[in-house]
Length: 287
Image (cartoon, rainbow, N blue to C red; front, side, top):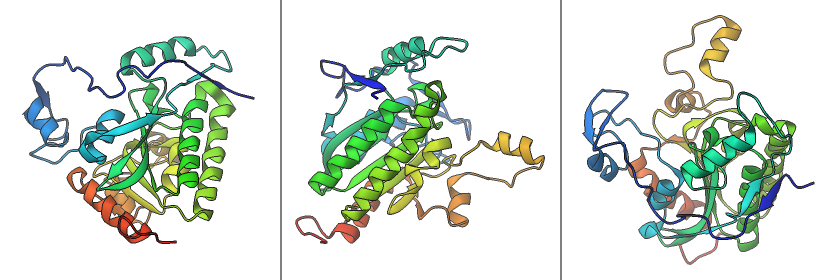
């Protein structure tokens, strides 16, 4: 059974930068520094004073990782059919329409082909602004198709996670995506195609419990919230105060849950070096 449908036409504004109208200045939530927005963007949306990594959208992420900001989107025509006709405070169908209008995306992920330091790669970048980057049938299918493309073309794949977890408005269908993507990654592993998982703030729930932690290399940005249940839920459950920095990327690195924590400015060259190690320099084959 299919829980998504195709939508004709090109993805609106797929290669365009979203116009921002919030003003010319931004206050850092960490150090309270007032930053000129243009300076912040030129610094890859990292606070120049305290190095807080601001969240960035999927298109910005693709532009930062891929050479000259050039990439080709694919599988952008899938949209949810709202299989459960779910309604809580608001109908799920209405939430979808609003998120599509706000982000210009059909769902919470973008698949792209491009080059990273001259190497062809496939990137799936999640969009947190789309219902918290939650993973429903469309996100699961879109990421699975990216993995299948990577297997078929023997092209390394990067998945950039930014998610609140499974999209429970789609019930068990959303939970099925954990197994679906994990099975696709098993086929990728059998084909000996590199997979690098990049975890950003936040990466939680079923995304952490599946593909975000299944990379050949699992790396995260500084200060990213990473975990299954949120820290407040855990504190309420165990009735204990959690350690300082619990579930932040540095804490997970210290306890062996990550391979590296890499600042955004160093992310692209770090990934390029890792791919050189895993797949051989550009123009050669590791197989």
